[in-house]
Image (cartoon, rainbow over all chains, first blue to last red; front, side, top):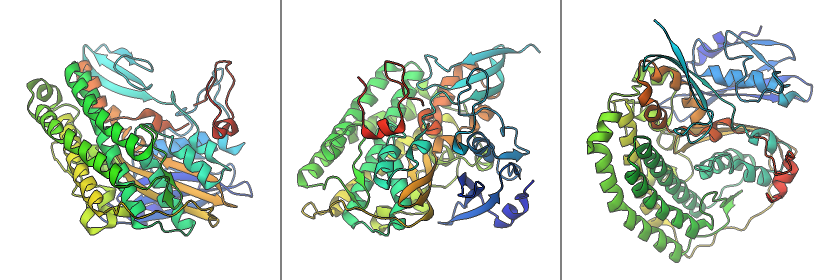
Amino acid sequence: MINVLNDVKKIKAERLISIASVKNDDGNYTVYYHFSWDKKPEIRQFSIEVKKGDEVESIMELFENAALLEGEMTELFGIKFIGNPYSGKRIFLAEEGGKKCTPPFIQ
Amino acid sequence: MHTTIYPIGPQHPSLKEPIFIKLHVDGSRIIKAEFNLGYAHRGVEKCSEGYLLDSALHAVQRTCGICSQCHSMAFLRTVEPMANIQPPTKVYLQRLVIAELERIHSHLLWAGIMAHEIGLDTLFMYYLKQREHVLDAFDELTGNRVHHSCDVLGTMKRSFGKKEIDFLLEKLQTIEPEITELRRVMEKNEVIVSRFKKHGMITKKLATELGLVGPVARASGINYDVRQNDPYMAYAIKELKVKPVIRTEGDAWARSIVRCDEVFESMRLIRKACEMIDPNEEIPKKKNLFAKDGSGFGRVEAPRGENFHFVTIKNNKIARLKLRTPTLANVLSYSRILENESITDVPVIVMSLDPCISCMERVAVIKNKKEEIWTSHELFEGKKHD
């Protein structure tokens, strides 16, 4: 499991804007976290490299709105987030014949 | 205690877009609320992959039917620095005018639907009548009433001349007294006040915990508006500084008043911007642009709150596009604020958050009559639905 919680705590951000993943040429992923503050005109980007099959620590403990953002990453890219009840659940994509479809962005 | 499950949706008379809300009720009191998404997923993110920036902009603008300009502005705010281009001030001012008109149109539509939800259908008609004037202004300025599609990289498709600006100012003149009266109704009418006040309470603490954005957060006392906190394009001009509308009550009524007051703030910004636009100035023609490889991000204030785009470019084409729309940021609050409310107040509370489901889900399988699935190529080539 990749630990991110401590690094994210150091940023001392007030808001989590978004979590996005990008598939790299070597088949691994980069997960980007974007944070902001209510008063500062700044967005801080924090990224981690995730190998295929790696699991990532959820940051729901710090930011509750990570729930759906991380869940979406699991659904689209197959990256599992430990400690997030939405990770692995169906959120946006339709089920086909009662089965979850393959994450579309890893095809 | 015996609880019953009461399903609302995905198709329901009180919902304007498909979402499934599962309520656990004891009598008419809600014990627990769960929501289920994914009925309007359209694949804008996946569709845009592998396309040039101009083509991707075409798809991005169609993410939402209500706030299409905000999506194109967020995308342009992200990719224009990557393509190393700085549009002239007139282009920025024109974009501001369209974005603020869109805010007026979005808030009027919302206010109308909100009145419809509590049975005040006459008020709904009054709001929609005013919205029609705004759509006429869009028609005059951009040539389109709903999906404006007026932005291109580095410039805009049309330059506003004297005729267009006069038409717009005349329309604003027409709607202002009417909207002032409608705001008074929203504030004072006994039916509205009794249905909205103290319902759907969101405290400042809860709003901070869930990271809520837009008028929902501002009605709970959080001073967070991207136009003010992180000014972009024409909002960075001193005269066009935004004064956010803040209220502290945190209920459905406060959210309504925040939206009503934002309409007046938008009108002020449009008038100011129209003064600054030079009708005789020409805007640059469209050029083919090349963007550097890499990733970028940008955000704008859409009518519903902060709209964030993350773009990765490879070989001048989109490699990955991620949209974080304001409704996605606000959707987690549904289950929290519906608890302990009465089942009759569900439409009012859900509508007071101004949900835009298709904006939130961003990806559907588009089928024609023969039940064939459209490929993204056909979508971009503009094959008509026959």
